[in-house]
Length: 509
Image 1 (cartoon, one colour):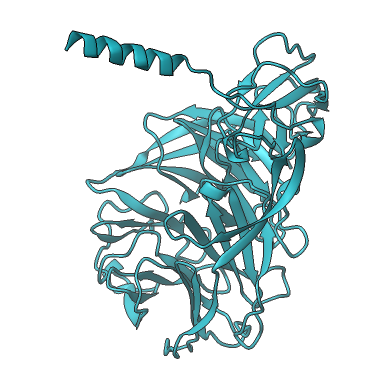
Image 2: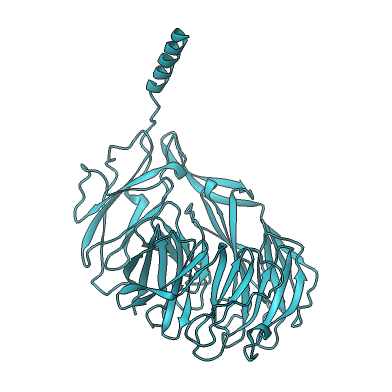
């Protein structure tokens, strides 16, 4: 028995000492990366994927050196996670030129700096210049599970930080983020979705709607100084997570709240702000049996005549199938129609063949276990009232990020999709917001394996490709990001969380 154990140990030792083929150095040069100064304290570094003979590009890591001069004899300032395609340098000095060098490496080639690599430079702006000032930061006591912004009291916009069953509030005063403990909410069940919504005319704060496993809760803010302690909960069924939505009147006041319950039924509740009692303000107006659960859906006036009537329709995405249901002002719905089924995706990737980098078209079949999608509808510009459908598909296993846009027509029909490929940049979630107030649908997304939020501005009828984004950074990998008018201006400020740090970048007027 002893001899057998010794033999086994020797065999394991021999295997452990066996050399591993390290291959050749990854193909990556200064032409692969770019540097852009964002403001007085941040520089965005981004790059296209390297290519390697042993590892796919999604498994390559990157080393970053930076400073007023670069010395590669020492350790790099930053080593990214595998698959990162950007990093934002933070905490920099204003009006200072920084040199930056980026190299790719695999598990075998991680020491030599190829001669083809050269530094690139960028100069931070003077203090107070740039699109965003900051960041302002605040250390949180718990790891966030979501973010919202809105008006909690009449004196400005607040930040709501979700942490499982808690919702804590913060606000910006001067150059500080401060806690607002008066309205913290602590439940015994996890919060699946939260929204601050304007329900009354005039300069009044928002009401709060929460979706939990026990149902929908409405916290009224009718006295303008905070939420009522007892929420209204007399809604039918339990909403599916992230299924709640709202329809607004022309003056931006909520008219309807809708959601999908666990039985696949869409429920519409009319809201009457003039009713004396809170219990009388909600009336179930209509229901529609969608015949499906675990779907994303949006409700809107898709036939382009919202100025004269409200013929509400439903757009929903079930896995990779996109459907449309036309309705009328009384919520009588027609039979559903399939708009499209998205079965395959095509993107171009870089591969290393016989020491040469080449582009190769890659076809990816839809896979419900690895792909996620985000659905949104939006009318672009001030003159176009037709709602367009946007679907952002993401597949981390294949480095796929693509946006499908179905342009709406007056007749309630949709054109074939136009597709925007985000060049192997993958995101841990995406959100669509009008970030710059230009009536465009901007894309906001924390990048996988990076410390920043990618902001793609919708500049010309379509959300810009990867080379046009702005990547504002946090201290760690960014988890959530939203916009809100926090400092009293009319421009959107950027709020993000990274780890247990809350950061705010104020839009510089």
